Image 1 (tube, rainbow, N blue to C red):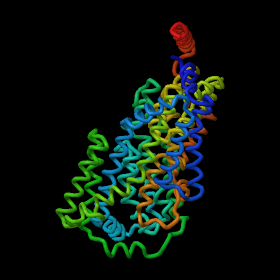
Image 2: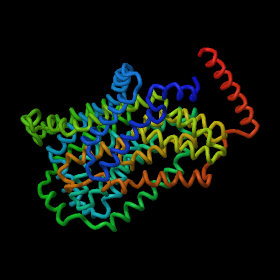
Image 3: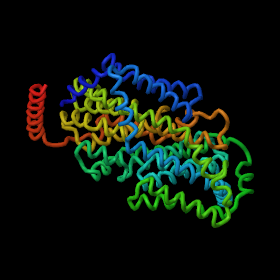
Amino acid sequence: MSNENLAREGTRHFHGGALGALLPFIVFVSGIVYLTTTGDLSSATGGAIAFVSFLFVFLLMRNKAEFTGIVFRGLKNDMLVMLLVSFLLAGVMAKTLEMGGLISALVWGATALNIQAWMVPVILFLIVTLIGLATGTNAGTIVTTLPILLPLGISLDVNPGLVVGAIVGGAMWGDNVAPISDTTIVSAATQETSVSRVVKSRLKYAGVAGAMAIVGYVVLGIVLPPVSGGGAEVAAQDGNPMALILLSAPAIIIFLMLRGKDIIFALSIATFFSLALALGTGLIQPAQIVASKGVIVTGFTGMMGIFPFFLFLFVLIEALRFAGAIEWIGMQALKISKTPRTAEGMSALVASATYMVTTVHSVSVVVSGPIVRSIMCRFNVDRARAANIIDCIVSGLHGVMPHSAVTVIAMGIVAQSAWVPKGFTALDYLPYVLPSLFLLVVFAVAIITGWGRRKEMSDDDFEADLARRDALDQAALQGSDVNS
């Protein structure tokens, strides 16, 4: 079935057609933005908005009997299971490292090395970038590093928003340029090209954004005043150098993922190892394992608030697929596209629109990729360029949008930290996710000016290929009419 027929058929399942299919997501995005501006965004309130949007799906569907099937299909998503299990494992490991004294030990080490506050943001960015580059996952990098590096940065008297922004920015930029990143692989696959071509051509765009981010973090580290005085000295006094041995737990995650292991396997090994190591060295006591305020219970409790957000979000994503709403958006974009520049602009808008309603960047790449391919192939735009537009636009939005899954994950971790000041909101750190901001700027300039644009094939070959595609589309359309 063509994209046009799929969109037409899907939107018929909702009252109001395409608008009715998109309304739950409009409610979702609007609600998250409202919570962000009021300073009330958290994993819990984000889950509440996702639930309200979930109810809108039920109300707007014409056939209520189909709603249960959408719920079941959404909850059976492998990515959802991966996220939820990863959160629980990361929560337990983070609490083990915290209760084992790793944070104070890191502050002690930083003080001993005489690391100045202005150097901290760029150092955090580079460390997390390397981890994101090695692991190829922004969510896994954030849940692994933020609980450790956030207290470290704040203890060294750095602005909390700048600390979170540098950590999230490093995770996003490292994941964006990683050859093993799921979005790198999927974006290449949807554009029918190789990962190596995509990564090689991406470096000139991402490299500019990364270099600008490094300069930005150095400047901000110098310009922004310290948040308090003497924090590092106070924390360092309680530091036990023995606790630095617990750094081997996140190191194990990096090592295993470099060996091709998935995030759940790596986190399971690292969590077990961190518990065993902390017990063996006496950094935590056996009674602290399963007590009501022990590492497991508090680790679970800290992450449970994020569960409703992702449970209802994946139901919303399944409803989006069922409705064919993205196909409808892509159909409109193809009608508007008249030149390679407008085709790229419309492709960026399709990727953006997909992301705005799914908020999970790997899902949005999967959904928007084939639609972008159908647009770009009509204008002889290089496939690697198309893959980079999708992935980098989505990665840019993923880091800076208040309703993104990354924002909810980061704020969920921040909310359970006693180190951030009262009233800290997502707006306090989103302006400092510099790599994502600069990626959006770089690609806007590249699309407008044509920098980096190249043809996929010669003009003669392109005309022949276009005629072949038109013939195939016409045959498919006639077959669809006969079947109907």
